[in-house]
Length: 501
Image 1 (cartoon, rainbow, N blue to C red):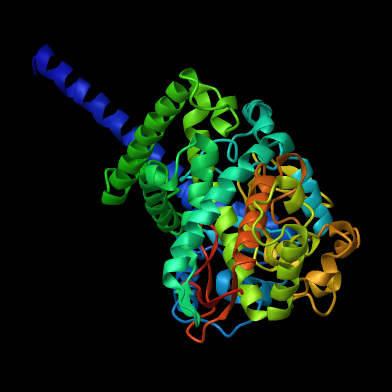
Image 2 (cartoon, rainbow, N blue to C red):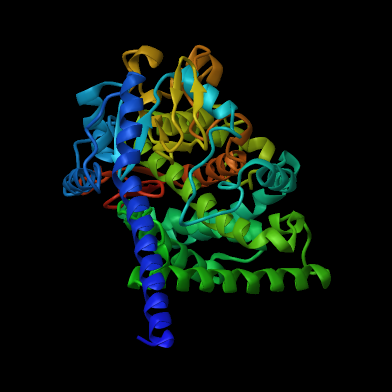
C-alpha cells in the first residue's frame, strides 16, 4: 500500500475515532441529564424527608399534569373560593398523596414544594441565593438577578414613588371614563348583561399605555395582542420538554412564531419610544410618565414587562373583585356608600381621596388573598443550599403554592376560604396576626415594584364603576378560575349591570 493510501486510511480512522468519541460524550451527557442526575436528586430529596412520584423517563409528571389540567379545564366548577384543585390539580393531587413535604417532576427537573411560612420568608429574604427561574416570555426587572437587578431596581424605583403615581391618576381616570362611555351605549334603562372581562383588559392596557408612553390603547393595541399570543405560546412551552438543551433553537413552527413576535414587539416599542422622545424634545409632553426616567440602552425589555405584567396584574385584580362584589352585594353597597361619601358623584378622584377608601382597600386585599394574580411562586438555586434544617441540592426548582397559604385555616381561621373583607379592617398585620401568610405581590427586597401602581389603578376603576353602576352575577356566569400567566376567568365574566340613580 502506498504512503498516500496509508495516510488516507490513518486520517479516516482518526476522524472516525473523533466522531465516535464526540457522539459517546453527548450520549453520556444526555443519559446523565435524563436519568442519572434526576435519580441522584430524587435520592437526596427523599433523604431530606421529601416524598413524591418516582422519576419516570423522560417526562416525569408532565403527562399526568397535562391530563389533569385538561380535565379540570373541561368544565366549570360550583361557586367556591377553594379553587386550588381546579387551578393546579397536579399539585393538589401531589399534596393529597404525599403531604406538604413533597416534590413533582417537570421532565427531569424536580420541583420541591415549600409551604412552611418561615422557610418562605427566608427564601424571599435571601433573593441572591433563591433566584427567579428564567422566563421564556419576558425579561427585564422581574427576571434579572444580583447586580443587574440592583441596577435596574434603582433605576426604576423613582417611577413608582408616590409623587410620580399622583401624576398618573388623571390618565387612569381618562381610561375609566372611556370604558364607561362604551358601557353607556350597551346598558339599557332596565339593566343589561355584559361580559366585563374584555373591557377590563382593555382598560388596564390603556392605563399602561398612557402612563408609560402618553399614548392611548389604540396605539398600543398591536403590542398587547402580540404579547398575549406570546403568552399562550409560552404556556404551551412550559408544559412541554422545552428545557431539553438546544430544543428552543430548532426552527419549529412555534419557535419561529415566537421569534417573529419578539421582533415585532421590539420594533413597535422602539417606534413608540422614538415618538415619545420627540414629543418631550418638542415640549409637547411632560416627564411624568415612566419613560421619562428610563435609559435607552435597557428600555425595551422593561417596556415589554410593563405592558404585560402591569396589565395582567391589575385586570385580574379588578375582574375577581367584580365577581366577588357581584356575589356579595352587601359589600358592593358598602363600598359604593364610602366612594360617594369620600369622592362624591361627579368629582374626578385624586390620589389622596383614593387612598382614603378604607373599605375598598379591605375588599381589594381580601380579593388578593383569595384570587392572587400569580398562583405559585418559583425559585431556583445554583448550588447546594441550606434552608432551615434541610439542605436543598442544586438543580431543583422551588414552588411556593401561594393560594394554599393564603387560605390556610390554621393561620386565617375557619372562614379562611370565605370572602370576608372585615378581617382587614385593622390592616394586614392584624389580619395575619403577625404570621407570614399574605404576600400576593411577593415580599422582601424583590416585592413587586408595581404593587402601588396596580392598587391605585384598581381603586380608581372601582370608584368610577361603583358610583355609576350596580351589578350582580348573571345566571350565565360560569365560575372557572384558570392558571396561565395570571389567574383568569376561563369563560369570561357575565354580569347584570344597572345604572345607579
